[in-house]
Length: 187
Image 1 (cartoon, one colour):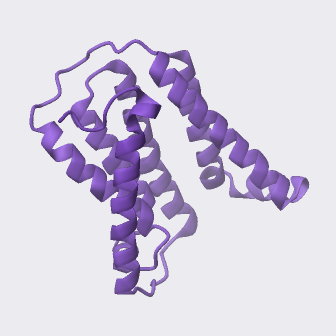
Image 2 (spheres, rainbow, N blue to C red; image 1 turned 120 degrees about the vertical axis):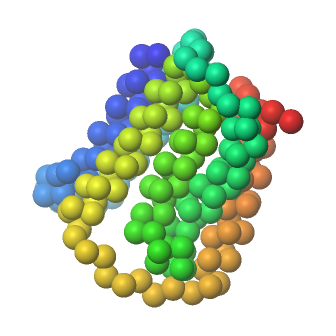
Image 3 (cartoon, rainbow, N blue to C red; image 1 turned 90 degrees about the vertical axis):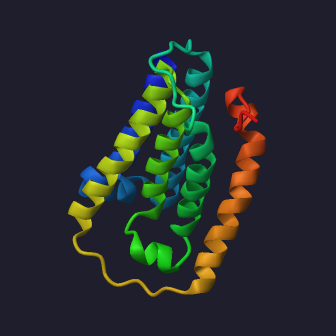
């Protein structure tokens, strides 16, 4: 569980740093140079992901609650929605126009979907922490950036977001056993 907690802590701190301390981030970026800063930031995020994956896989699954039977039916729908939202964050469509933070909202939906079907301690740590992180990140970004200017939207961008979400859904369904040792769908 130590690696999982360390990875989640590193992920959260590195991401929250840019929201909580924008001036320090600018100074660090200016001191290191944009490319070195980006490489350092990316390396820390990659390290956090490696720690999270290995930490989750190597933590004993201590059962805390029994997931509801209907959770297995709702989770694939929630996952598809979460992945469409992730893609929509980079597509200037109506989805992004409606939601200020489609990617972070997608992370919350992703985390809640997984909590519906995973009732063990390691999953509660992973998905609970990432849901709290995403909500906190949205609040901090809103406070830092103030009101959002209007965003131009196109329907074609929404189509791209939905298509991209479907492709990601299929790819992650196929790769899920590689990362977690479990099939994404129980049927």
